[in-house]
Length: 120
Image (cartoon, rainbow, N blue to C red):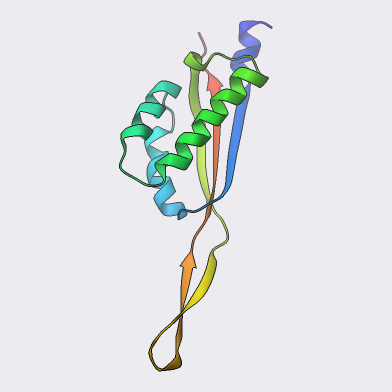
């Protein structure tokens, strides 16, 4: 394969039904969008948010897809696209006083990460 063919390839990874609200996951995704693979790993490892762990797994998975399926080097990758969509909210009811019930909503989200090789 030629080098210019590899630079046009985009590798995607998708995590669905992540137990985090889309708003909180976007707070993490906005920090790593457009960064290199190594920078994203360092940022995700040291940010104090719970949504960082599934995003870290997803970035690692996208890099593994790029190296295994497309033959791209991990050192040349950067995050070209990162987005978070809302998923379905699972829920249950919590018993309250006087026989009432209040709903508890557990929001989920779908996270998509796309990576490309840097053009030389």
